Image (cartoon, rainbow, N blue to C red; front, side, top):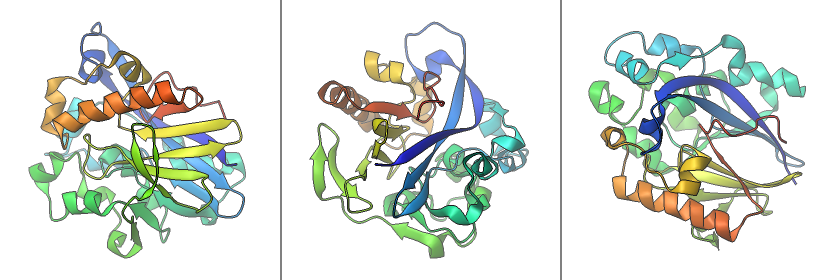
Length: 270
């Protein structure tokens, strides 16, 4: 069984109907959550790295300022994932690996705070941003300056997923070989996006990344606004993954689903 702690690395402000079609217009806080996962033999793993103060600096100029214009940032230095390790009596060298669900800026801004740590990421995700700069990169919600210069050396590409399938979510990859952390594909929002099913001491948890932005969207099958089509990888797959998550939740009501940005998530729950 795994230890799992959720870290709030900051948030942005959005209009609720942009996140879920058909809901009343109101400001909505979208946190960027990171999962700190402890394995009794494999040590500590981060699932995503969330926001970090460098995100503010990286979005001061065009075209990256457009990112901040669309999603105004609220980030405090003490919220960086690396600064929160001490709360759990951990230091930087305790982090054995980082899993990146996808390479959008709000999931990788803290990655440079973890030098020399292996980075588990899908080959498709890296290929989708290779050689992209300026507006071409921004169209992938990618800010090149956030990624470490040695990422190619540190990246651990994932194999083909051939493990036992999860209901409605398809085949898995058993990261540690003991069933405690199963990775699965969550296509649509970003090329190569993955999620993780963690068997924790408090029960199973599905880290859904941006397979859905909120649990309400999963329950009510509310797609994001059409304006988000500007940066998603596959519009049809977004809807298919949203439906798959709902069907999974019905088949496995014992699993707590955690979308990265969901304001409903209780980060104090372990």
